View 1 (cartoon, rainbow, N blue to C red):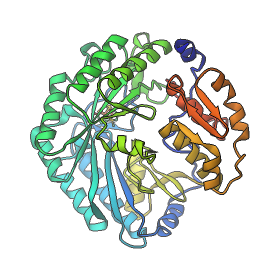
View 2 (view 1 turned 135 degrees about the vertical axis):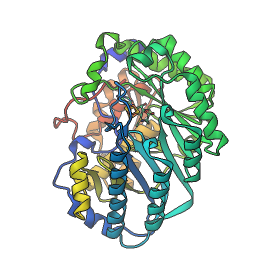
View 3 (view 1 turned 90 degrees about the vertical axis):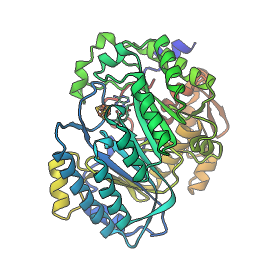
View 4 (view 1 turned 30 degrees about the vertical axis):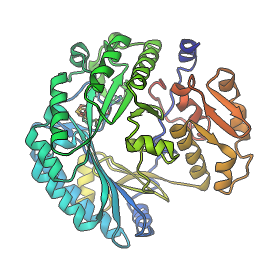
Length: 449
Ligand SMILES: C[S@@+](CC[C@H](N)C(=O)[O-])C[C@H]1O[C@@H](n2cnc3c(N)ncnc32)[C@H](O)[C@@H]1O
Ligand code: SF4
């Protein structure tokens, strides 16, 4: 039954880190719109800040992130100068001083920044925003570039959570993705993080990579768990060579097929659960004492551009090329080309490429999709009521879910939709039922499982 479903529902649907999803953003939303949105915010609103550092020192062939390979530091420090100016620019549009509750550095590899540059950016953030004493300060970290001194510098800069890119530990898999990172290297970095007070360690693991097998992903999980990460993200490798041309370096003949991917996910997931991790949404796993598990239990888990989060701040300001932000009025994405991003900031213009102004119906559907993706269950009537919509707003969607119910993916109980354990890997398909933009040609997506 399971394998049949994996073949039957080999559909390409979004991962819903926003609704509408980024391919629907358009250039009708620009820097002027964003400036107006910023100036209308209430200074009491909690902020989350995201900083994108689009540089790495070598290219992993599987990589789907927005990054550039640099062999010298100058482009990185020049870029940081622009980000500092962007912080000033955004803060100048805000009607007062705001407090940041969550800071996240992603990339690329934010760990390309030198210790001095970490201090430089944190000083600028502190000059423009208050940072809550309890703020989470999280960094995506590539262990291949970390040294103990570097970890000390991160700790001194206030970093308290590190997300480590692992992907897989098997040498053959690592060779096929051009990322040589032996287990001992990862273990050493985890040791340094803990020794210097960065206690919250997340790990990114992948399945669906070349040469991965069910046995190998089980080994991968066992090795990862031996390092006791508080959270694990288990992502399916998204093979999109039409968008990321370096992925063409991956031999497609070495990639597992749909059924094998499904089995790998199921095996890795079950193994994490056997090791005591709680399943969080689509692809995250957390130890019971981690904040993500707590947010799930309290029904306040959220999904944003970084994935699942316990962060409840209603505003996320994005800084850096290609970064995406969210304010109550809508979404905004910065320009990606480094040159145009820099030119805009240097001319004193908010460097926005596109965005999306939310209508009340988008907010309602986004709330339904977020609950489906986070809780794997939603009470459609209750959400409709909370948004001032008629209780029968989703009659057509409930009808559309009937075939999924017949296949055991969801159960339907009046207005309540619950994704079953069998249906868990298909949660994106359930969410997609509520997406009215999906049909309007947003291109190709990676596999749902
Ligand atoms: C920005 S990277 C993490 C930090 C650092 N650059 C590193 O690789 O260690 C974010 C994560 O995205 C995931 N990722 C990147 N490309 C992916 C792809 N094509 N499909 C699925 N996940 C991908 C990887 O697990 C990676 O660790
Ligand atoms: S996976 Fe991480 S280190 Fe590798 S190229 Fe992508 S962003 Fe850089």
